[in-house]
Image (cartoon, rainbow, N blue to C red; front, side):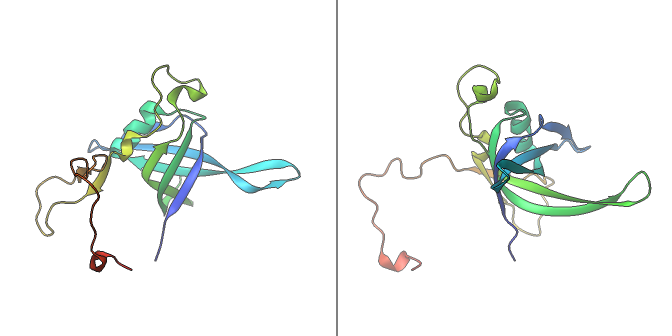
Length: 167
């Protein structure tokens, strides 16, 4: 089964950064995404609720604000809770796995300085390096840098044996 979402849109409000009782950062935000068709010459949009966690959440809240263009990849997650009136309230959110900042910080009148074309939230790719069945007392994922070039010190072309190709 597949549950993948890719969105490109603008933040409708400033991201709300909060922390859980365990100190984990969480950021709720909404993205306005244009529909691919127009209704009587008027562009329509969907307003999609999203949530980011940990460093991604902190970076989003620190560097982006209302109106900024972002791209995100994630998954849809549904939930429910009992409202104050006693009725069941159902929720649908996109949980962001990856967020890209698609314009400079100062493009929408933000802080002055050097452009931030790329989110630092994608500098790391979450990987669990802890063997299964062992508890090391840390539920935080370990991170592997993906912005380093593994072929930077190679000299010349890389030879690939046709037996190594998947096709």
